[in-house]
Length: 99
Image 1 (tube, rainbow, N blue to C red):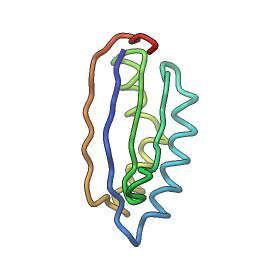
Image 2 (image 1 turned 90 degrees about the vertical axis):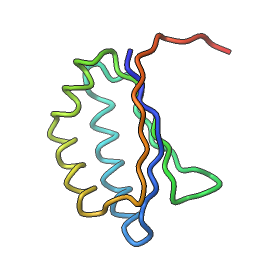
Image 3 (image 1 turned 180 degrees about the horizontal axis):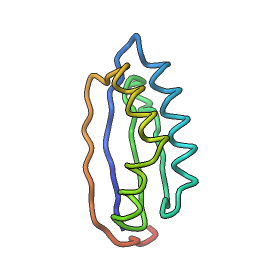
Image 4 (image 1 turned 30 degrees about the vertical axis):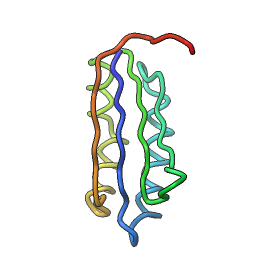
């Protein structure tokens, strides 16, 4: 399984436009074959920061996602509204254990 975690800090003036693009992309991504989880959440202590959590069945599913039309639209929207900061990490992992 592939897991992606990270944070994105939105620019003040473009935050609403970026969030609209994110919501559209998230809803489409959740429908993709191989998508287990796909979530953006707002940091409660800093609303300009979004926390990203994705889980994909395998690398092939993630690669298909990266080549999707909705991801291309999302990339264009983010280029028009660039984040102030983006820190993402990809991990190969197992299913984990409930705690």
